[in-house]
Image 1: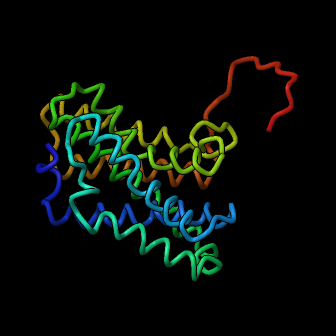
Image 2 (image 1 turned 60 degrees about the vertical axis):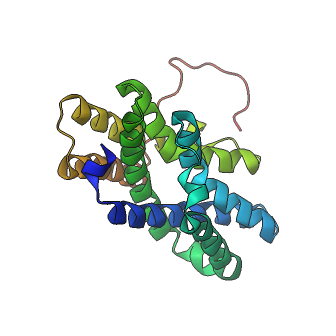
Image 3 (image 1 turned 45 degrees about the horizontal axis):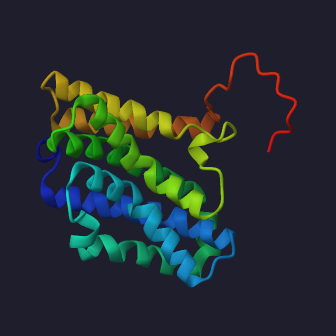
Length: 218
């Protein structure tokens, strides 16, 4: 299914772009946490590759692409190096970084879903791993930085939901034998646009109904 979406060269280029942007977000958090250069590099690598590594291990695509393609490993280091020396400038273009991050989210949820299905998983499991591919690195980043993962916090704009929508559209296309470069791109763009709208209008998931907690919110 993955080969039906993009040619190998296009897929590789898009992967590296997504990895680079995810790595920047990890490196920036490491700087805010006052990590040293090693910590910055580790957080950049984990954020960029964590979701894909988790997916590949689960589906048995071993060794994972991150360990067989040097570009996958070096790209996060390049992003970390950029942040180490230019983080004040990178912070100033955070909005642009967020836009590319949203694009990576859309791409990875679709590509991750298609790859999981290629390895024999059913539609529900494939969509779940598509979501994990898109958000897994961010979860690992936050855990290593001693933060509550962003996608679990009610006070953060929707992040996982756009990826769920993109992955669901992908498995529906697979189910109806309609997954093509056009429909795959449409699923990725839908997730991308939903994430942008969530950032623009601060859309958030609802909390528990009729919540009456006396515990101070953190």
